[in-house]
Length: 460
Image 1: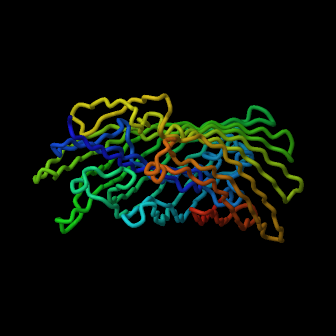
Image 2 (image 1 turned 120 degrees about the horizontal axis):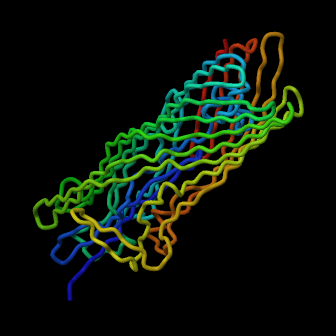
């Protein structure tokens, strides 16, 4: 009977759920035979996107100060992205510039031999011009050109790991983990042309045609410790250096039956990018280095978003707004192999150092759920002779959108734990001079994200 050892090594999707946001990936299953020749059991649609920040909030400081509840308001130059139907409310040309500083915090599995459940917290800072737009109204029509930074995310971390593949060939997977070095640098930019039309006194409709560009930089190197070696031995790596351009669309509607009430609805399709992983399986168990390498075509699908909003103005200088936002996070893993259990059937992939696995029990082993967010905001204007000073506060819920495992296995649960729901609190203020210059600032903070935004709007 053959002597066979199977190691199940998983790296999981995690999410630091700040602004709807998310995710990460799987590394699945190294197998080896008594001959010490090893190969990696991997899924066929593997992607290595960890903790990617999907910023579905409106990019302006004003909107963030309102807790992102802006779909039914959408009355400034950011409407091209927030709700293109709102552009018809503008009567003068506008230019807007927006800047954002973000600090992302996330927790990663970093188990060591003495503490296999150890997790470490990592933080990364990113600053960028998040939005730039021009709006030109003409009668019942409006046109907007804009550039939006949908994703600007950086993440890096390192886990020490424990155990040695070749020194301990019969290690229980629950007591084994490889060391890990990972870095992500992902940017998605939207270049949009928005059109809006007001067919009736109360109704406006709008559409944004968007060209989205992706710059995807990622590497993940897995290594092990060996007593004889002076340094960690790399056993597996994934590198990705991809660029792509895709088209998407943003549809909006705004209904305002009277000056005190307004309602809005938006659908934003997420672009579907093609990326390529370069996978290396490195085997030194026989005393010589054997490298198997292959490229893997993947899909990085930005989730679709549906939004409904309402706004009420009980006073001339007071506005209350509420949005419901549905984010289809499941889009991210629709094309992935999500089967981890031993009852799954392996199907070899030609020329690849791993196999895809077909579900054997009808139960998905990895789950990523769609979520519904609640956004609420208040805006109150203090009036002086020359200045209007808006004060804003709000919050929004951010249900967990981390991939988690349904498998009753302690090792898997360490790497694919259920995420935690979060609540984001937002505050902002601004200055409006004679309705020509508007300056706004806002902060957004939760357990795992902190943001500071500045916006400037110039009307002609």
